[in-house]
Length: 206
Image (tube, rainbow, N blue to C red; front, side, top):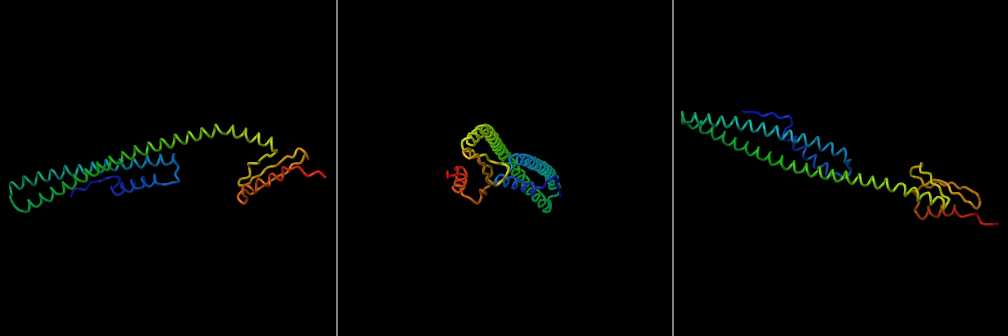
């Protein structure tokens, strides 16, 4: 019996292929980290496929030599035992050739998927870069709008308190400053607006 060796078994290769497919079905993924992981998996699959094909090709060559030897022996010794052995070897050769064919087709399919995943990753990266560029363009405009809003309403927000709507309101008429610290998770937008509006109203004249 001729035994082939491989760094990664075909079963392990199939596991990597399934893991690669599952990775792109996920919703919460890090595109940059996934791109590196895909490259590693692709290299493992390609290496395993090449080693498996090489191993099977070597086995086919050995079996072909054994078939030729069996045929020569049958010519010298025409008996049923050698005929049966030759038939077994021929079937084994056919089986290995079929395995080589399947591996070749699988490798071709993997390469197609690799190219598709690369294009998807490239498109996602471009979209992320465009989004980041848009954010950077929007920041000055938003800052300007906030500055105008603060000048008109007298409200200045404190963005250091996470989960809280905090800051203070200056009332020019009474020269008063009112601080506020509202839990945005527990209040509706209407309630928040009412609280802020109430602080902005100048005190009634006595």
